[in-house]
Length: 114
Image (cartoon, rainbow, N blue to C red; front, top):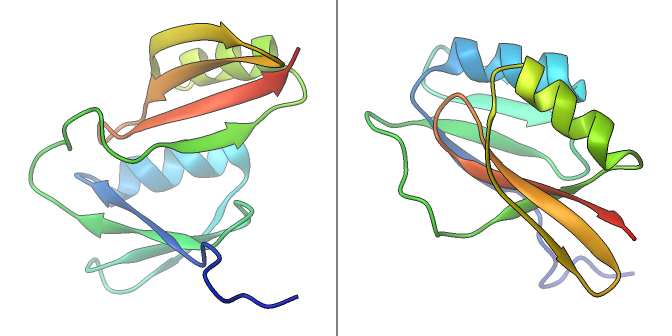
């Protein structure tokens, strides 16, 4: 199978690498490689990516990274316990999902089949 035109890498803005590493490491088990405080790469997320430094949280409404969960309620409770803000919940044909804000203000979602 060719990788041509497939999503290869995802970058998320970060206002605090330490908070992002702690949050995503504890919540999802992602692993990290720090490039001297200028960039923080992650792996173990299904697709590799990284965090790029920014001074202010990004606006909501941009591209959306959506994670899958086998137990949506448990994932939501774990995210709340980890300090995420749940900002939206909704059902759709075949499933349900919620959106959350990470420590840098990035909006991501978690979904599960109905």
